Length: 329
Ligand SMILES: Nc1nc2c(c(=O)[nH]1)N[C@H]1C(S)=C(S)[C@@H](COP(=O)(O)O)O[C@H]1N2
Ligand SMILES: [Mo]
Image (cartoon, rainbow, N blue to C red):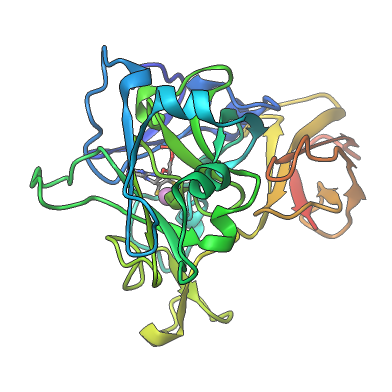
């Protein structure tokens, strides 16, 4: 049992990693109890802390001032913004890879789209000041390396400055109008629209502005990288041909009906679709293994970086076994 979570499937308990079955992601705005958990290390104990007193410091070669701001100061000094932003782990869906990829075997549930409230990273960086040679903006969190070694950092990743300065790059202290759940980064985290969840630092303690591509743990080697060109499954790819995952690729998810459900001769079908920080143009549904497709009704995103809801109704020609497939463009 993960406190505050309900119905998640635990993939690993050291560190805790848990995903959400597709039918429990049916809400337009993902409730706190349904948002997946992806931990690289041991989360800090934040019970009973004073949220407003939590401090965030700034550093790195390309920062003008090495200052510290409390959440209280962030709240007071900068304009508040609320956006619905999907968060998706870079490994979401990897359980279908053959041969398998290493790491947590996420099926489809390492994604969610709650509503986040905080300040724009851009506004805060403007206040702190960044030098002309700034290249990357990265984070450090308060979690501890799985080994327990206080000198080791479990994960420290980042994004190019241009991405950090987008409107939908937030330093958030609230999710769905409440405190962020402990496992999702309470009291403060980054949320960066449409890029892998790994850039959205939880339990945020420090932001560094770098004069080079950030080289923290899980930025280098093949972690959170993909081949720069399509390759066949299991192909050997030279290390220098890997690139850092930036925008997440196009995807759709069927959240109704649930896997294994039975229905009458027709059923409503619905779900979400997203494509990193871009917009989905259309969603199509098939109940004949992709032989024919029918276009679903698709909503516009509530804001840039939010997944889009779609719905349709399908009629079955005869009783039998069917798969509902969705395809987003
Ligand atoms: N400090 C810290 N931030 C982190 C992580 C972590 O282990 N430690 N995991 C990252 C990864 S890989 C993902 S996918 C998201 C997951 O966010 P969630 O657990 O709130 O769903 O947080 C990111 N931020
Ligand atoms: Mo992730």
